[in-house]
Image 1 (cartoon, one colour):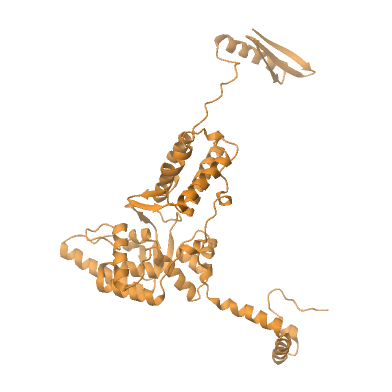
Image 2 (cartoon, one colour):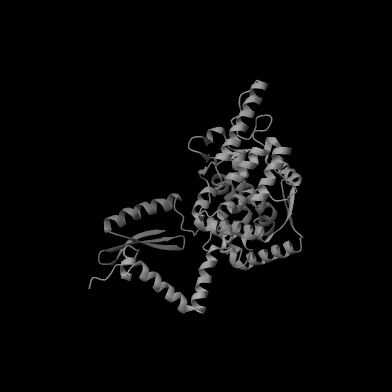
Amino acid sequence: MGVKVREWKKGVWWILIDHKGKRKSVKVGSKEAAKAAARKIEEALTTGKLNLDPPKPLKSLLFTEYAEKWFAGHVSVNLKPSTQHGVRLILDKALLPAFGDKPLDKITRDDVKTFAYRMLEAGRAKEIKLADGGKTKTLSRSSVMGMGRTLSAIFNHAIEDGILTSNPAQRPGRYIRTGDRREKIDFLTPEEGRILLEAAKAHRARHYPILATALYTGARQGELLALQWGDIDWHGKFIEIRRANWRGIISTPKSGKGRRVDLADHLAGILSEHRRVLVAEALKAGKPMPDWVFPSEEGTPLDAANLRKVFAKVLKKAGLRQIRFHDLRHTFASWLIANGESLAYVKEQMGHHSIQITVDTYGHLIPGANREAVNRLAAMVENPQPIRNQAQKRGQAESPNPAKRLVGHEGFEPSTS
């Protein structure tokens, strides 16, 4: 064994270590520092506290080991209960069976694409079904996209942890094509909405207020179930959406933050009467008034599954097609747009994370007023002379100096030369 100090170049000192046939050199600043470090290294080698053997390569981490660690850490801590449930379903039903026993660093993009194509094919053949709380549905293209995004998220976290250097599942949209999200939208016309509420009032009076609130606010089902009387500002005429109810678990709304929705006078009247009925029931039963705006007969929040069953029955009574409860939210947005409201206002009322979501989802519902613009364009091309003459006549009638008509218009400054 030997630990020596040598000057390689003037003022550059090295420690040379020769221990059990293994050699190593370490560059140190000054001679004094090199000698002091050499003594410590020699002592550490003698006592066995320093080992020059290269570290043994770590055993490859299996996908299932890292995926479970990711779920217990990131998913369980940071994501909403409903999202956690969806991720757990994807892991158990698809990702773990496909990749669970493979080393995380051995999964290639070709493996990921092969998995996605197999899922897509099985979905088309209706060979794979996902069971979610007793409800079974055939695997859809959007479900496969969800699997791809979850897989990509796992690999991204592995990169952050220094386990991987690349993500073989990145950009799943490149190998999983989904349809236009507008295909999923259904909504009621104003006349159908009126028929629905009349049927609810006649046959399900207790649920009439919540259906009316869904139609006039666009709130999600979970947000309605978690609504409390303290969330309603009767004077300011708005409702604060502060929480959501998912399978009895109260958490924040989907966006992670609350929002304020306007309260129409008509809806305020419906809710005021609804509150009067609940107060009378509480007094008769000798129980406190429930905090929930839409409680069950026991005073607890309504059950989501039961509400959907009631909604289906009301649709049947009304003679309307069967739609999802969530389509009442789409109905609210479509009514606003048909009434000429801006997409920015729709975004705020709906609580979308960005206006891009609003545009992608509802942009095609904007009334065709803009078609007049292209009609005018076509007229200008097909018959330009009359249009130009008319413009000149309007300009002459308004002002003998065309520049004066433009003063104050954005981006225009009349010439002073």
